[in-house]
Length: 523
Image 1 (cartoon, rainbow, N blue to C red):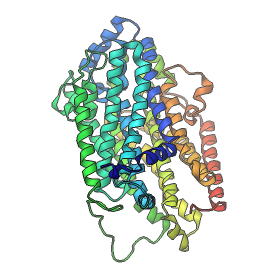
Image 2: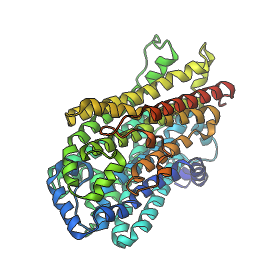
Image 3: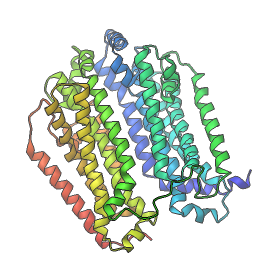
Image 4: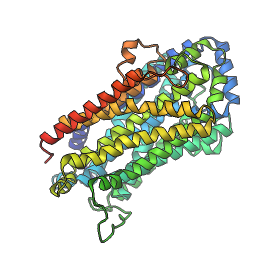
């Protein structure tokens, strides 16, 4: 067994060095999202009577229970676990699956793993290093959450931190299994993300059907396990055994599969393409490579619009006469009526998430270059700009499609103010394109630092999500391009800032493409 794990330490150190930006950024975003919540809740629900009223309203509001889960206690700690627990677990899962796929199937697909394995490296060392890297990320997140929430109750903080880390490790080991089954890193990420989406849907369905969080559907989801751990509300410590069992079982399966296949191979055969090629342009190739991602994101945004649209009236009733909660929504969505402010806030949040899509899509160029797949394309009569344009059209056009589908989802779920809400959704595209422009600039001018684009998107998400709740100063909110957009629906339209953002996006893209023309391609 020792020979099977030879070189694990060196590979772990190398993986941590490669992820020295990705892991700290995503861990920090997740931790800050959680740790900012207690002060926000103290401001919104500062009295026991206000918190008791919140619990009573949540018990009768099935749409909001589906989004954030049931409330088990009226303490600040319990309300923190209720408000952000599901999303912290989901974000930990996304970080973990990205890390594992990056250091397993991505390495094999690029050919680097074959080179590494030709040395003194055991057969299962790469998988072990990948899982340990994910474990380090989740352990760091756990420590930050426990330390930050200890003031609300040490036992509850420990349970919550272990639960969030447990969700992350469940999806890390799941990604390890899928990486053995499929030959494509893109498909591995897509399938694991689909399982995460199914886990969210199962939890949501279970929570909407039962206000006690004990529905059978809830127990089918690792996110439901996190809820039913009941941090800060008479903790159920035995639920942690579910996480431990799932992680151990999936790790055993992944190790067994890893020992039975050759490097670069998979258990599920790749479907062969047609005998005669049908991709006549670089744009067609880019679409073939990214169409699955576009379809998955589009479906998710449309469904999110339907769900948020359906809960609009319920959210307005939940806020009721709570002046502090109304202020937060108005800081996020503008000084209009509460319903318009809620709609504007939710549209803005989905715009922030769309920034993650555009970064992912733009950085597909970097993946094609570093894997060596771009070189054969560019060896044909295809220029660099034409090659890049195919992917950028999908990235920038796809982000506009996402926001269009979001607006249509709101039309289905809410059914009112269709034109204003659709316009508000499309307005987010200007800020999304600025984030995409930053990704293009980094890829074209500083290719080794292209991963920093994830940090930019994460920072924008953090500012947009937490800034208004903390009443952050205007100078901080203005660091994000989303802070300059008009608050629609309900607010006044201002074309000046929108034009500036679109112009800035154009300059960033143009500069990035100019850098791409002049620099050497990755060897």
